[in-house]
Length: 96
Image (cartoon, rainbow, N blue to C red; front, top):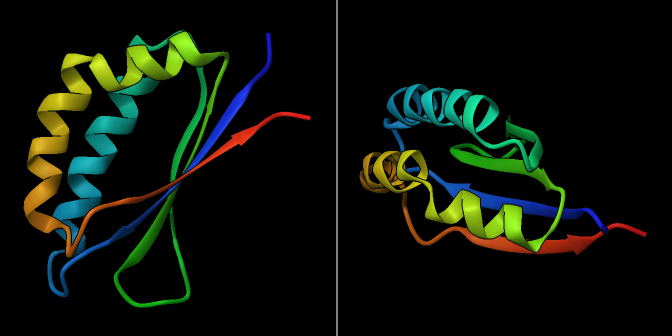
């Protein structure tokens, strides 16, 4: 089993940061509570205004698929969408 890392860069529309952070907090809590294959899921602010990074770590590909297919991810991503200024940039990493 090899861990999979994901770094998602999210650009938020100016003025919508507070709403974005509130919905993301709900999503992070749901991931931690309902996804045993996820060991890390956290939002970080960058030095650039309205730009965030999400750092994620999964046990395997099945855990990544389960995350994306989960009801909480689909439902809360729909709420995050109106806050975003574009599509997320996703970087996938493999553990050494």
